[in-house]
Length: 181
Image (cartoon, rainbow, N blue to C red; front, side):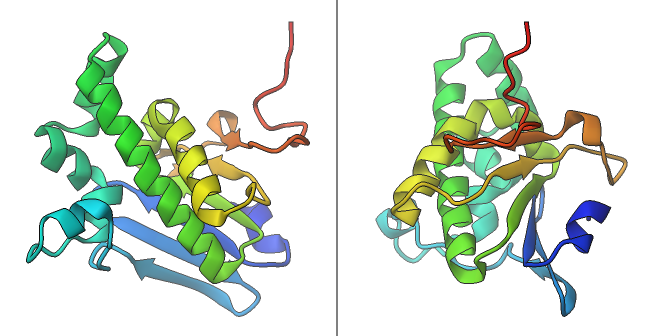
């Protein structure tokens, strides 16, 4: 958890996306780490295939890509960069799942901020748009705050590579979307 998050008031959520899907909740009472892997997700795909339990990690972790395409997210991303439309479609579906999960977490916790970490955030550009659309759709309004994407190197945050994903008209000055020439 970044030091700046622990010093500010409110509830801070950090969602780790990778082989495991975990949620870290930090507030004035302390920090809790929750394993979301085995929570049942009621996505349409789970409804279409009855008698098969689908867990959060089947939709929001590395397992999604292996189940859908038989490939890792890294390999699929590389193929997408070369023009593979099937890979691009998989990332759009994945982004929609993450957007729905974020909307649920925002509804439950009303956080001050949200941070995404984990290996799958390395391909954030491939699924961020679908995430933003689904998040807004499920919240019913424009999200109140940004999602920070924080890349980790050996488990430690790398601040220089942080990305803020804002779909608000007044994005923070350091949101990574400044127009420098």
